[in-house]
Length: 141
Length: 141
DNA sequence: CCTGTTCATGAGAATCATTCTCGCACGGCG
DNA sequence: CGCCGTGCGAGAATGATTCTCATGAACAGG
Ligand SMILES: [Zn+2]
Ligand SMILES: [Zn+2]
Ligand SMILES: [Zn+2]
Ligand SMILES: [Zn+2]
Image (tube, each protein chain N blue to C red):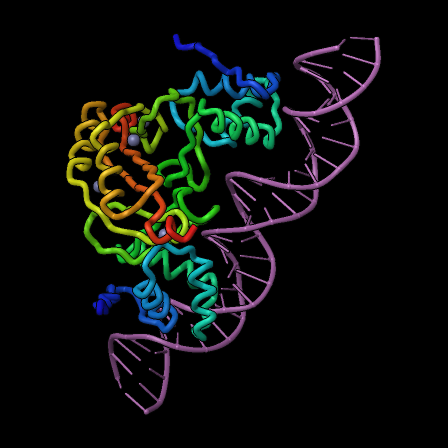
């Protein structure tokens, strides 16, 4: 279905490893840790060094093609990555399988800016994530 | 001024170290890392083992007396802790000094529940933090 | 107050995700 | 085809947090 692959960013070389990481992320529905991705690539016969996976993910995050989640909602103690749309959005994440839905909430955007201004804060950013158990996982237990 | 110290939770022993950690948190305005707190206690002549600081903080978080922030907004790679009120709230945090204001946003509470329900998610939780530069830090640069 | 049981402490080792080091391979370009 | 600079990978290094385990303190009962 979705295979837009605007994976071309000037200054970055296109290598087998980087393409493999992005291709894998394109197929997965939810957030996955770097180590998960590394293991999956290895299983598929696309051997990529762990350090390279981290580097590729970092580059993708910098280029805005991938979102990173550090909250404790998922993964015991590691960051999780997901191929996301480049427009501002938030996530509704399944705690047990990682399945994720991108959601937008215009009201919270304004609210964050307003409350920050009221308290004299500048340079405002916000971070909003919703965690839960998806229907499939709820049924499977 | 504020010295309510409801530090009594059944099943937990009251020790010098635990009291010291909570007392220190009561005086600080913003989020601090475990290692920061450890160093501060040491400077004050209240020597507490680092492992104990971690254990005390964990207990306080479990008891709902302290909030923990894992986002990358503050502290390079570590969790930060703060004495917070026990009612549900969110944070407006200064990226540079850690100063924090507790804020409430009823609308987002309803929004989170609704959007989760629409997608078949149960057991919903949410997490919202706002980061910025406070007036004092903005002036100081 | 005295005493035993139980839980907390702390120094250091262990864990674990992530990053760094550095020699080697390869992409892109002339 | 051959160069230059970047990307790769294996393993070491880092850094926060947790674990281990022997010792010491809290607290209920007597
Ligand atoms: Zn699920
Ligand atoms: Zn937003
Ligand atoms: Zn500030
Ligand atoms: Zn809320």
